[in-house]
Image 1: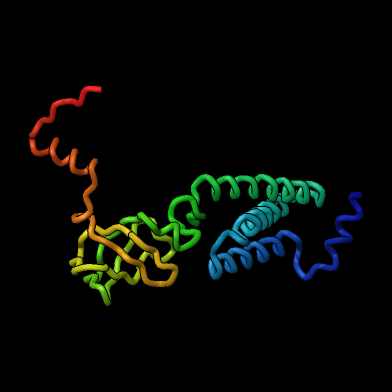
Image 2 (image 1 turned 135 degrees about the horizontal axis):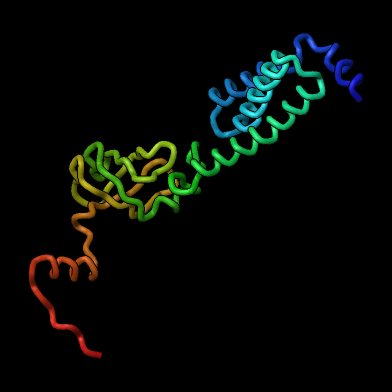
Length: 190
């Protein structure tokens, strides 16, 4: 087996560790140009394996030790990179800041960035996806810049319908408002 590995490496233009560093670097550059975790795990694993291979070669270890060290580095480096990617959610892969369709926007809140009228306006939604800025319209009146809004109709296109949170008040908000003004209500008996 020891004689097979050098034969495999003879046809390569560069020694295997240098080739792995170059391939890993290429994959990391590809990830930078097209983010989305397509190449990050493999790119880091190969890059690290190449660096370990260069280091082990510099120490004068044999081909089998270098190959085993690089193989182990690919497994450990890939596993650690995958763990870090999933644990730290580096690309915000969809748990809280993505929308699957227009209906997912219903009920989201945000702030007005350009005065909203029945014919124009723009809002920035909290957790509104990759680009949280949306063209917005209101059915009645105007909503000034900086006002908090809620999406009442996502529309299905690129324009959403919003209403100001200051005018939307339901029974719970009314009860909370009574409690905050100092008025006390008698508890209801059942």
